[in-house]
Every structure is written in C-alpha cells, then in structure tokens.
Image (tube, rainbow, N blue to C red):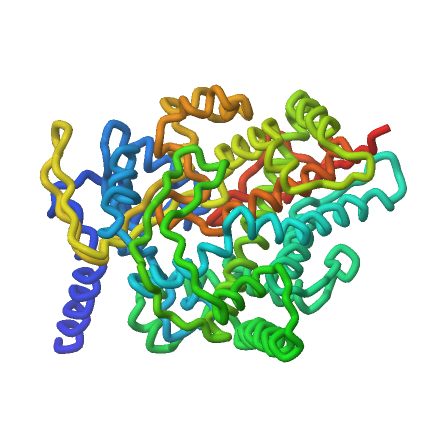
Length: 524
C-alpha cells in the first residue's frame, strides 16, 4: 500500500513538473498553436514529419493576423514575433532590453563555444563587439579579399584540370572544402588544399567541431533543453577535448611565432592581434552589408572598452568565424548553384555580367566584385529563399512591456530571461512581403525594387546591433567562388539532382536529403 502511494505521488510530481511550464502563455493571455507537453512545438520534428524550417513557417502561418504568439521549445516558453514593426522595436529601437542571444551551453563547459562573440552576454559582448568591429570594415575586408580570391580561383582551377566535357560534383562536400580553405587562410593563416588533401587535420577537426547534428550533439542540445541542471552538473560538452585543444594550440602557437618573428599578415588572426596589442579603436556605428536591405547604422554605446584579449579569447573568435564559414556559407552556396542550375536564364544573365567584368588575366579585384549589380541580386535572392538560419533570437535583459495595438491583445510584460524568436525564414516566405515567395526572382533586389522591400522583413544575417559581424566576409566568399566557377563552367542538373529539392527533416537548417549533385559543363 505504501509503495503504491509513493508510486502515485511520484507520478503526480512528474506530471506536475512536465505540464506546469505549458501553462506559461495561457496565464498571460497569449495565444499559442497546438503543442504536446515536454516536446512543445517540436513534436512533429521528433516524428520526422517536418524540418525545423517547416516548423517555423507552419507556426508563423497558423498565427496569421497576430503580432506575436507563444510557443514551447521543449519546455522553454518562447515568444515568436510576426510583426515587422515589433521586430524593429525588439532588435533596434529597444535593443537595450534584448541584448543577448540564448546560450544553450553554460560557460563552464565548452571554452571555444561560450567565449565567442555570438554567445557572450551583456557588457562582455558590448566590449568585444566594439573591439572587433574595426576588423570588419570595408578596408579590412579589401585586404582579406586577397586570400578569399586566391582560394576561389584555385577551387575553379581544380575542376578545370579534370577530364570530360561535364564534371559531376557533389557540391555539399566540395563547398565545405572550399570554405575550409578560405577560413584556414583568411582566419588562421594556414594554407591547406582540402580538395587534394582530403583528410588533412584542419579539415577533419573542423568537420567534427561543426557537426551539431551528430547523435552526441543532438543529445547534448536536448539535455540542456529538457534537464539543464543535470546536463550542467555532468558538464556535458558539445566538442571533444581534442577538438578544443587543436584550435587553442593552433592559435596560441601561431600568435607566439608571429610575435617573436614580428610577422604581419592581413588575416583574421592578424587583425585580432592588432586589436589586442595595438590601439583599440572604438567604432561607434555598425556598417550595414549590401545584402541586408533593412540594416540600419546602429550605435554601440561603448566609449572606452576595457577588455584584454587572451589567446583563448582570440581562439574563440576565430573558431566561431570558422564555424560560420564552414557550414553556413557552404550550404548557402549549395542552394545558390542549385538555383542557377534550374534557372538557366538567371545563370545566363549572371555569366554575361561576369564576362563584362572579367579581365584578360582572370584577375578579380575587390572593387570589381563589390560593384557587380546582378551578382548582388542573385546572392540576395538566394539568401531570401534559403536563409542560412531559419530564425534569430533574443533574450530579455530588462523587463519590457508590449502594449496592445490590435483587438484581442492585452498588455504583455516580458520578464528577464524570456526567450524571443524572430522567424527569418517565415518572413522571407510571406507572400504579403515577397510575391510568389517560392520562385527564384533576383529582380526583387534590383536597385529600383530593393527600396520597395518592407523594412524588417528581410534579414539573412540578423538585424540590429547584434547582427552577424562577419556578413560582409561571407558575401565576399560567396561572390568570389561564383565568379570564378561561372567564368569557366555552366552549372547544370544531372540525373542525380532532385528537382525540386527534398529537404532533410532531421536538420535544424535546410539541407537537401541527397546532397547537391550537379554538373560543371565546360564553356567553349
């Protein structure tokens, strides 16, 4: 009898703690979509019925005509914003209430992950952003473009050396290798050739470090969502110790060698060393990237950032720079070459612009690539249709009140640590902002049409002061390789190409189920 009583008591406690978080939004008179306790809005993903991107879009459209609605990521209550004006308030106008991103891994575990600019919080983020911002200005990108261009040209030359009129390429693999070469050179000052030396240590370690969809990565992520206290107690790590040691030692050894030999190099590591040892210049405004039509010049209110960069701090910044280049840039490129293959009219127009700007010696200048209008339009449209992140997020750092503006709303006060989601993919695919959103139409971003895009509906690299600091670098990396590839090849579908694409429902970011097999047909 006592055992049965204890069983029902334990069961009652389990149900209480499982269902209690799911009352969060109902108590605040905030509408929600259908969800299941414990799994929240994720249950369709667990059943393999939709990808994360599809989840974001479905949730957004089910809540049509609302400015915001409540959802649950596992047991974490989140507020999803569906109104562009409210996006502006959260990410720009009232940014001081929403300074941080959600950090799923505590800072007692993965040093490389928690000390980088993406995951730092509050004043630590502000200080580091002010120190790093001058390293991403146009003049610094121009210097780094030398490394980008060399690797982009080498990438195209690799396939030119192959026999046959048409070379079949698995671009998901090829572009991760290109991105690794670029980051190794432009960030770490290391020269590798991943297309030839396919199992070099830099590539292998980078691949392991960026694989968040592995069984272990998914376990760690899920553990910190469902039972964060237990996960923190066991200090569960995303990265194996040998991965952290490799990148930390690589950066530390390189800094030591450059310091002792007085080596100056215009790569990311060199720029961070300048920020560390040289005069710290505070950049009051964030420069917008041409690819983000709604970016504004935001002010970081830091007059005198007092923050010393240790070897570990620098390694963390370079590592997150690597992760951004390895996965997000390579996947963005995969979708771009796919769209060019299935839209030959677009590819033809882009090739004509490349021919107009290509020099006899095949030299590509920073000024040239920056002023190619149609190339910018193609890249912008691809990042609209296939943004590298389905959403961006903010965490409330000071209590914030959303006043009612439409019928059915009541005053909503967001407490500190409240999680807020901005559904990038859903905004990009909303027909009220982009007519025929499933079609690939670069003309949306022509100089005359770009100004008609509703502000705060297009943000492939985030929005406001906390947008992606490396956006300009990523766009240069993308444009350079497209320029060199299309100079020599026409990108064509093959028998293995899925038309339309079949999206992997197990991935957090959109990816093709069978990769991106396409053909490179030599130009006559």
